[in-house]
Image 1 (tube, rainbow, N blue to C red):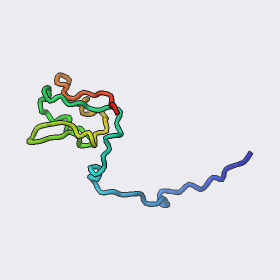
Image 2 (spheres, rainbow, N blue to C red):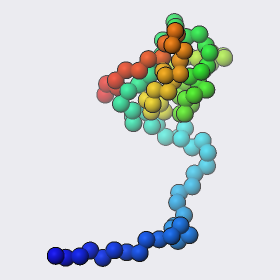
Image 3 (cartoon, helix red, strand yellow):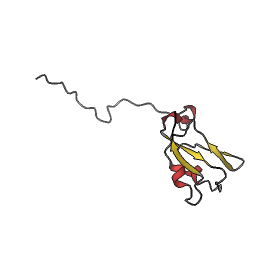
Image 4 (spheres, rainbow, N blue to C red):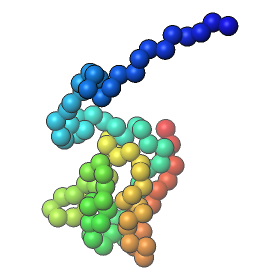
Length: 100
């Protein structure tokens, strides 16, 4: 039986410095194709409470003139937080399976 050589594990002080990016750089990368489900915005049901906008981790809820107008699918990763946080009696955002 052949044995593999095990290298000594590095301590945290010995690890090489990783890639450090300034904040807000995700807007430069289209990450929407990562998702398997996508939110669908129903403007006729929206009460403009902005709860989805506040909770979206990707800043993918689009606004204009103080109103929600849709979803930025180029950056939305389909986490569903917006749909989950939308008030239950409103359901202005629902999730559906992504069709590619």
